[in-house]
Image (cartoon, rainbow, N blue to C red):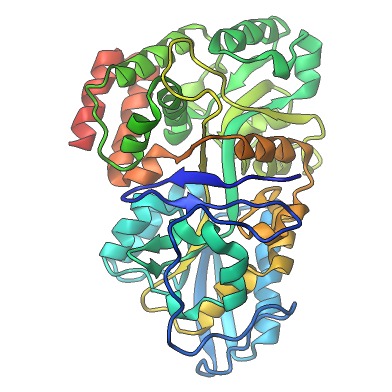
Length: 452
C-alpha cells in the first residue's frame, strides 16, 4: 500500500498532512515546520521503551480523558498507560473514559471550571484554536521527541498554531461509505458501480427491496447528519469555496451552498435512511447507526474511518465485520467540486496548560512511537497518525479508504471541527432540514446566522 501526500485544510490556515508509503519517510506538503527549539531535546523514543521522565518530580499523577468506551480501543489505552507507568516509576496516570458524544461539552465545562484534565482528546481545527486562545493547552514544541518529529513530518501540521505545537495526532480518518458486502451481494449491488448520487439512489432502492435499511444514519447526535451536508457541499462547491468554508470565510451567497442543501433534501426524500433516523444514536449499542451495519440491519453508513473499529465492537462476536467494504462519496451532476475530493480528519491528544511536564509530553511522545502506533492501528482498526507505522493497516476496508485518500486531490476537515462552536450551530440547521422543519432556503438562512 502506498500513499501520496494528502492535504487537509483546517480552520484559520491551510494545514498540510503528509502521508507516505509504508517503506519510506514521508515527504510533507505542509508549510515548513517550526525550527527546532534551542532548549534541551527530550530523550529519544527510538527504542521500544518510553522516554525517561527522570526530570519529572517524584509521584507525578495525571488525569487522562479518552473516548474509547469499549473493546480493543479501550484495552489499548490500558496497556499503553501500564507500559508507560512501568518504565516511569513515580508517574501515575488515572484514566477517565468519556462517551464521544459527551466529550466536547464535558471538556468545555472542565476548562471553564479550570479543571482541565492533564491529557485529553484533541479534535484540532477551530476547537483547538479556541482552547489555545483561552490558555488551556500546553505548548509542547520544545518537548517533542526529535525522532517523532522526523517520522511524523507534515502529519504534525494540524496541531501547530502560529509555529507552536499543541498536540500529537494519533490517527487519520477519511470519510466515505462503510458497507456490508453480503447485503450488497444479496441485493445485486456492486459498490464499484456507484459513481454518481443517482447510482447511490438506485442501489438503495435495490437494497430496500431486500428488507434491510439501505443507509443507517444516527441523526440524534446531529454531527452524523451534518456530514451529509459537508459531502454535498464538497461536491457542489468549487475547491476554493469549500476551502473558504473550512477557513471560516465562506460566501454563503454562492449558489453552490443552496444547491448542496437542495441535493440533501432530494436525497432525504428518496427515503433510504433507516426508520427513526432522527432519534437514532450514532455509536452506542446494537440499535445505533453503526450497530445496524454491524448486525446486518442496514447495508451502509456514511462515516469516518474510525467506523471500522466502532462497527467491530458492536458485532455479535466483538470482532471486525468480515464483509465490510468501503467506497467514497459519489459525484453530484453539475457540481463544481472534484469528484475524488474527500473529507477527513485526524484525532490526537493534547496536554493541559497545568499538566506536569515533561511527564505529560513524554506520554504523548510514547504513544506516538512506531511500536505504539502499530498497536493502536490494530486495536482501533484505523490509519495511524505516524506514517512510519502505516504498514500496520490490515483491515481490507481500511485499506480501500486509505487508497481513496491517497487519490484525493484535496481533502477538507469536517466543517464543524474547523468552525468550532459555529460549526455546532451549522449542524443543527442540517438536522432541521432533514426533519422537514425548514426547507433548503430556511436551512441556508440558519447557517448564515450561525456563521455571522
